[in-house]
Length: 483
Image (tube, rainbow, N blue to C red; front, side, top):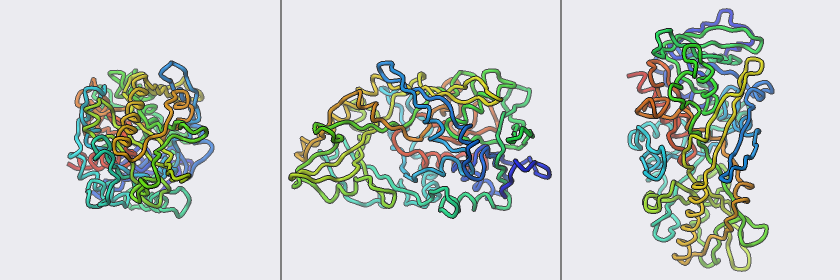
């Protein structure tokens, strides 16, 4: 049942077994799973049934991109353009690309500060398979589902192939596949979806043990109520989770879960880099003689969302030998001229984690504290990217396939950089409370009934589109609560 809090709360039951803050794809999947186990579920969404000017204004804030030389790039559009406060969350504008993290992404790597998750790849595999079914795609963990020949470079010594596919569950328009998906969940008998209900504070009891008593919600006209429940799940997204935790300071002045100053710290995301080539006006990319072109390369072109595509990624062996983070090279299209074939490409590289990348609160205006993002790129990030491109070029030439035509220009690197709408790391997972915000089950350290279901719990960004890993963690949360 979908209930509009803007119409008032008279007769609305504001108590449930499971209270979920946020109606994005994570909140929806958990609501469905917990309702299927017989629980009464209440989902709180600050936005309307569809996007609105008021909700868009609430998502605005400041974004500072800090380059290695200290120059600050102001990109304040990023916070509101990469989020959506509405029924269905940011998945309303999602392109649907799906991938799974590599086993190495979960491992501690001595050359990558703060790397290593308290869960490993194999632990998540059964939950990943559920997530793939949720998204109506073949199982990403089963190689047989993707039995295609790869384009081999230097016998895959440094670079392997990785698959990216697309879920049909996209679109915010009425009648779209994602619209039917979210409405099908919200209209289940034991699920109540309360829209236009902004959570202002998460309130703990007075004993100091972080047990959640209730959350305070507010309508657009200022009407406030308390919502109580047995278990609470914060699924408001990798940025909004920070605002809610830091604003919940009634019992904990520094913010709920922020005992060690880690809420909002170690932000990480995905930056997409493009570079110039040796040909004026042409983007960097893979250049090879027509005779060396292969039909296999067609599967590596990122054309559209109708078909899966592959990309080249650094192998775990290469990462460890070269002390490099994960990195990928994606071909964008095919061009042919004068006996040469050229594939323009973009590049991605896992960033080194730093506490200098963080999300904080701005001073409140009319009772609302907007967010400020400081996203720091280090000199080592640039060095690592340059090393990956040099290695890819060397492998192409060693295999006598062609070469990577690029000019490594740091000014161009940041000029043409685009930022994906992936917000990670701000409530990171850890075994020890002084190293993170939630435990391996995504439960807030020190709390018995608050979980965080979001990419904010990711320990590293890796380079896979994060939705499948997020949904796998959601299924793991549900299993833990049921047990």
